[in-house]
Image (tube, rainbow, N blue to C red; front, side, top):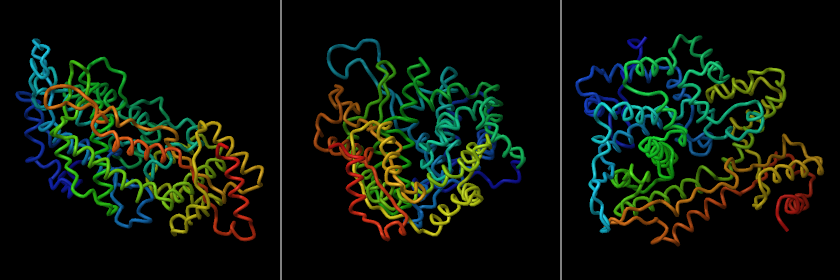
Length: 480
């Protein structure tokens, strides 16, 4: 099977590297497994040629953003290998703080630094090192179609579909009791392609990696090993490698440039402290982090959270809900959607009457029109109840009047408490010396997390008193 595939060598324009070429990867794995038979090329061929990794070629990283930014057709496979690439760079450039057992009261004394790759080399750590890199490579294998649009779809959740992180763990574990695994397995077997759980299990039997460790690195909070907890922060934390590649890659392909954010400047200033179980940014890297946060803000405001993209997102969400309502007797319908590719989902939705109308409008770039936006401090449950009352009381067609509530409604990550390792060895927070900037970033995150938008079919504006409806919206959805 492997011989039928293209050679595993991918050029990544973001990092100007031939990813998975011998010059890029072999030294890292020789460091991990010196004196132990391990053919890294064969290993990567087996991983990358699995059904789950191949599916990522057919999932757009930026969802429906390509309808506005035509070059944003990059896929989750590129993002996954990009995140892995950052992991290999972090191995050589990020540092582990080692306590020498004689710390005194003078900051910075009694410690030394070691590269992450050196710390994770040797027989006791080698499996953790490879597990860390593999967790970066496979972190999106269970992603739903069109980016994060369907993560918060109420009908999908009601049908039992988990988040893509939770589903990914079921898949790499080969959990035969999980419906999502069964859905993937059916597709893989029909194509005659191996599944990733089989490959990982084989290498686990050889003592080269740990599936449990990969799972812990992906979900966090389940392992008492301090180093696993810290590596999880690099996989899924405040400033993690997933986000670094996501911001960099999405800005590159949407054209909303990052203006030369120093990704390596961040990586070489990451410090992990196993004794205190904390991740720090060295003071020398703070400006790089601030630059990244500015770039992230630009990316989200100008592209990913723009009104028109949110209109398409909301239309797709409604189309999926309609389809699942029309197929409520099919217990596999929600899992078929969750395991589909972007193109497969379009085909699925075109089999329904009302869902077809919506997906055809999306694919022909005929977005619903935004007529209102605002925010409220209500919790999500109360908000959703008021939305339902508004639609029912005003006898509005829920297929033509769509309300977008952010998937992360009311949740704001705290950048203020990002730990900083100062030049004098003391520990602080990034917000201490940059309170105005950090308050701005958190304020913008908070606004986005509570920004509610109302979109309508263009025909609904004919013969209606839109100003009256806007006033109704203010009364239903906003605090007096």
